[in-house]
Image (cartoon, rainbow, N blue to C red; front, side, top):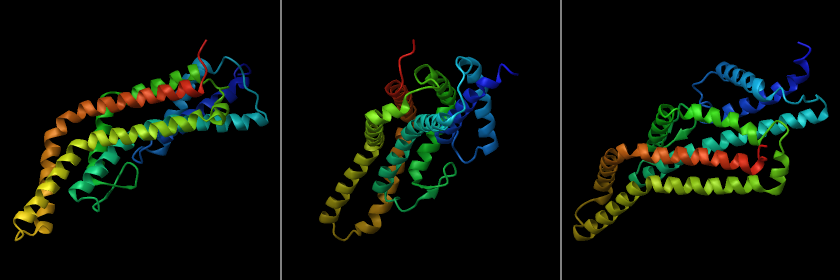
Length: 262
């Protein structure tokens, strides 16, 4: 036991990073997962990582150790938030579709986050979560987290990367990519519903006796759901590209703020 005590701070730092990561990452951060389970899986992964990388160099528990804890928590939150950011593209795309279909007011409570979300966005988010689990994306995400120690060891230079501005620039690019992906995912339905609006406008001019405000809303909802059913099988390919962009963004973030492994 005397041999392990000097390396105990290393385990604490690993535990802080993995806990912060699981609290922000998709799937693991949902409200349906008990807090006890999150703490238990964090401790188990921390022990596995400690056996691989925590016995290299002991860390002293001094005043700098508090800064090391803050740094590891920030690393975990950055990795988890970046992964979760790409899942929000699904909800953003659903919001665009709901506005065009006339369902923008009818929000529902998302059981995973506890916040209000659009109907189509909530449906696509649950579908994306199920596909992510079926692709074993949660396993790849944990594997990517373990490999992050190759570029971001316990004594990493995150604060220097934040000072250089590379983290802020990366987050801005990620936000732009998320909105671009959301527009691409919602473009077929949004364009089709926009053409439906044009058709209804032409109909209101040629046949003024039709009450477009009464007829138009059900027509747009029916057209929207029919198109959604038609393009539903293609979502699997869209989500595959989305998950690929997610893991690519995590890899870019680790290489931006980390150092090349020797």
